[in-house]
Length: 467
Image (cartoon, rainbow, N blue to C red; front, side):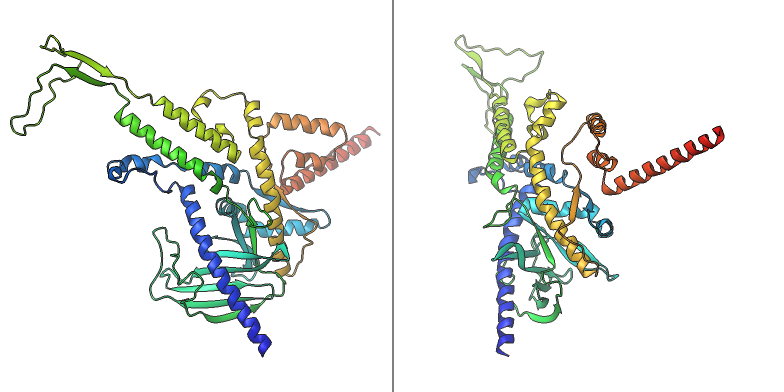
């Protein structure tokens, strides 16, 4: 009995610890998502000018972070699986991938990971009873690694509302031995303007909530049914965001954009001055009235012999554009997203296509690195799904096939494939080299085999007729 009580206490402590972790994660990820959506904090201005600058402030923020994230995410796309020792298992994995709509929804996982540092998928059973892999939100799911082996998940937690009133919340704790489920009733619904749960002490750790255990489901797979997709992972702190390091640069760009608009609105035209004028006043208000109106058919006359007219130099808006371009260059260097994707003004006449492709080498290398780590996560998820379905896959042989992250010239690819064929490359490898998915390769090989059979039959008929 004491052992069971100790296990229960351990489960509750782990639940509360992960709830605390999720609360911090939700707050941090929410801040990063605001940068992605272009909803970040406005540039700082003196408080007394805040109202006067409101229109300029709201126009100064730009979702540069979205360009960085999307430039990476759009080059991450799984197109199939491969298992050299078990081709049927690879085909089954791809069919399950398609059934779960992950061919379309996989981007959700990558964007979550790139923005917040970690995305998630869970493995569970659909309404028809078949296991499937489902993308999860970092606003609802968190995990902690095994301290002895950080490649393993020690436990994961999901916190989500039971219905749209957001008054009843469900907490699920995924452990290697079982999945535990609690439910709690809030005094009032909690939500923020974006619809996300509010970070208050009730949800942060659940110390003030009465959690009622409503279910425990044994886990025969020996690992939690949540797989993390960690971005820029390191040994000590896990995944890291693509945006967080860029925030100081992004703040400078927003500030310079504000300064550019202020300069354009207030000092981008030549101000006029005059001396020796008698300025009339409005008889009703007593305020000075401007004595001249500008037009092509109007003449300004100064009756004072000592009077003069002049103008003040206008501010050069170009200096702000150059300063913004300098910060965009910094953004491109840190993020390794090519400058031509960030639309710098000096690239109005872009360099050659070869130069543009060479300029993308850093982005391609980053995408290949993400493919390696995300590929391992997809393999773990598919292996879990297969084991749950009763058709285990050897994870050591399963390999994710990605769409090539590099944009290659089709003519150059075809020319290279032709040369590789002359040195003895097999037909299947040539199809793979051109970027075909495993499914397209199988179809192409069937067409090749059919063509060879037809050619052999035609040759045989010709030989028979000649005889």
